[in-house]
Image 1 (cartoon, one colour):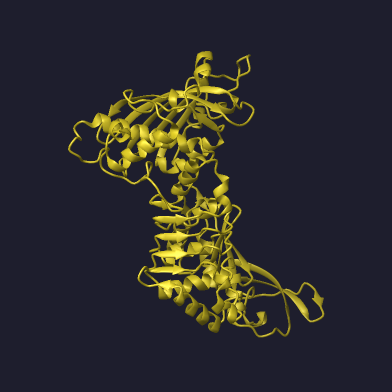
Image 2 (cartoon, helix red, strand yellow):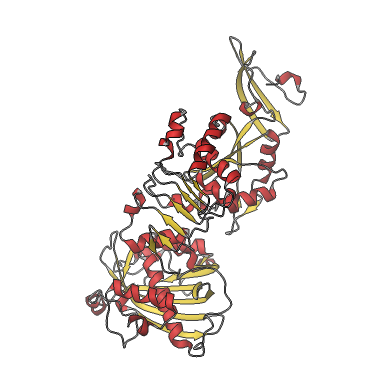
Length: 527
């Protein structure tokens, strides 16, 4: 460590004296302030271990408040593009709502501090970046020794199938070669995961399949680095680990996985049924074809742009049946996610600049109490407010605001058999349709209450012959006694052609899935 008195740019102020220790406060270029204790005779340490003295080897913690809502790749690329010096983030991870990582060097830390509030997210909000001195990151402090790295590499080579480009690291900690050399590789530890990914990047850059089952993984912060290091991975086995929440999988969204194994993790038991589970996982990995060995149908909702609503085919001039099938599949998928309890999966259903409005026939001045109070603060009525700004305020703009607004509405269960669907405008680039029906609330003070609704969608074409919402208008009211009596009386959905007999929910899903994959009409798909 340099002595503070040797640098004329650094000033120190002794605040107190205890034995051979003194407190030093210094300032470097007005950017970073550090207060520390140290001995007069400091033990020699390597530059990488130097923590809070302002030397080039110092480590700093970088914190982005509310960084959890940003994709890691987008966030890091944005920061790097605005930073005046290149940097290598170490141990990127999330803590509550924050995103954190570490960098080495006071120059890099100062450059990152200058980036604060210069980056705008998709909602046009400035992103803050906080820089603080830090101890050496875990993965650096406990970095594997060269001989340990070499043994780990030999062990992994024995587990690599070159013909399949597959690496089997299940139960890695208990591998006899590692245990015999007294090397403890616990992949939950950042230093172990970092070392493992480093070996993969250097030796298996074209890796297609990675098996990490039975490793007691409860977080994927360390593994998320694979998105940049080995983006070729298409098959990932995370079965029989300790993953508790689906949020952990969001950290892996950058991987274009085609096959994923999760069975044996606690998160699998957090979903009410298999379709909800599949929907949540496909939201993280839209291109997924197999989950836990089960073949999946192609995605219905995606935000990938395509030029037209219908796939070119010999019958494209008879577009009514194909469009009907497209809209019905879209509605089934939309309300399936909407009723699942986690409406974040609807993000891919909306365009980035979509708009949403909600209206109810209720006024707080009404003398009779209404059960629609929970909808009132989101309700929009241009005739009522005297202040014009109050007409615009409830209008939700951008898909993040829309889904955030939908998430605070009461949890629901829609009666698909009550749906009345109408397509009332169509061009090659746009489709307008509405749906009327009933739903009941399944939680809260109004649990069991039946509502009637009308929803109008304006959508544009998206990938895989699906739709992307650009405008969404929802009107909710109390159901009439007749609507309440008939609600959910017919459990078989009637979203199919009237010429088709009623089907169970499972049969209906099979028909839709087969129609999507085969391209056949619903009638022939049922046959």
